Length: 153
Image (cartoon, rainbow, N blue to C red; front, side, top):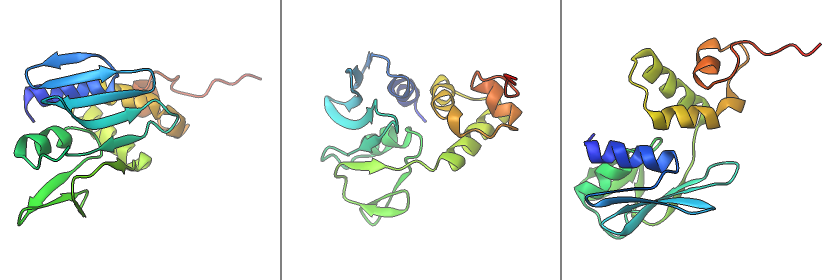
């Protein structure tokens, strides 16, 4: 992954303004927008589900594909000039990307184990903390939760 992709996606996932080279992150009250050459290619809504929507904005280029692939839960590949999003044929139009929470928690765990977790992944883990099992000390601690549930009796 290119440095510009890592930096811009990190800002996008953390809802932080960013502008460098051909990438920009715009933060609005209800949505964070990732832009490539001024074209809006990803939206992360500030709703409880943190809905993620992506589009290629009409540009089926390697750069667009590389930037979108930097976003968690997005995997785009191409075969015979056809794009596939998470192994399903995709024409590049705006689409919501569903998140398999347990799968994403395991991916974040691998980053923790490999000691290469990003700030974006830590922020995402914080957002997913309600889905972490009570006995999962590693993810609870990394998300900023107490390692063990606090007994209020």
